[in-house]
Image (cartoon, rainbow, N blue to C red; front, side):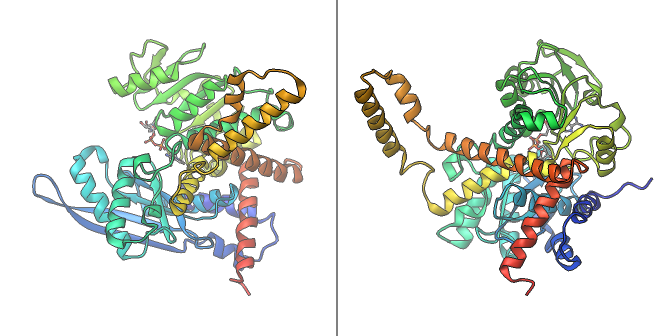
Length: 469
Ligand code: NAD
């Protein structure tokens, strides 16, 4: 059977959900289409004096809200179809978690490990110049972020280049995921993984939801296997183990490591950073076949590496009751349908990995308002709480432990506010998706529910804007 392109698979999910809405074909077509895309080539000078031509894309899937938002990938397997699919997923993701952006995505077709830091900087700065010239970047136009192969360092280069070109007051809001010292926000680096952990915790801890999906109530001691120990995989594993779950298996390029008592995630991550492999990690048993993670006996399987990892060839080996899509598009459409028929629950990427863009939204707001979150109210809140505690003490004649007062009075500043806003988003959005499934007597999967929710919100925004008079 012919393999469907990634973008076609996203369209299939869309079409399946669209049948449950009453919007006209015209509106649905407008939502589905990629609004703008550029495919560019530009030269950079290598350290040895030679010239290399770099290929890159930026797709703006939807302009129904401004700006567009989405990461920039550095990957040798990047292509136009993938960029379009990932940009479309961003549109639906933002709508699902009520982040007021259209979707976008970019890719640079390189393996960053093959370039010196100075060469990478030249690539990123020239890319920013190209995007700026073509009006594909700006705080109210299109705001990139990190993705596979890129991070805070690259975002700082983008911000600095944009600032020097535009001279705008809000220039640093042209990109998110920056280092905190360059206008970034505390908690962005771990946001996607923390969002995955919050989403899964709510799924297991909420009695109604857990029961509806036949999952034993509670996150404690849930046995979890994870593919990929990069940014998203590591932080998902770390926070889930802090919530009491057991990470029993982790796979990476070189193989899989497992431990029935639960792996020490921090130690494993440090070990791989130092040694470049998990092979001889002393806290678990190693096997060379990284694919073993899919058939590992566990409650929850988290693919956190790349797309199309679970497909029509291997879906049958999965033993987990729940698949939590931390990566983008890790389960193909065909496998997704077959797994649904088998009763496996898939918590979809368009909801579950939205923590990154949610906290990027907080960073963008912080940049536009030019103030750290919590700066104005923190001390005022503390004083009000202390006064209230003193009053309660006076009226009741009891002494309240001062450490307890400090603990409750201190809302902990930006990092805690970000985590709290993220938790609120992940819990609310899961309940919205659950209610859509409930309203269809659970005849649809959570992905279809997520797309229904996204289509409803985007179509209504078009009608509100009077774009279809
Ligand atoms: P990353 O580069 O930090 O990590 C990916 C990890 O997966 C790497 O450690 C890599 O070695 C490993 N890997 C690759 N192929 C593998 C395989 N076949 N088996 C086992 N391990 C493998 O990337 P990331 O930022 O963690 O992104 C991972 C996924 O999450 C991507 O699909 C990305 O689009 C998605 N995502 C990322 C963010 C974010 O904020 N970083 C947000 C939303 C979605």
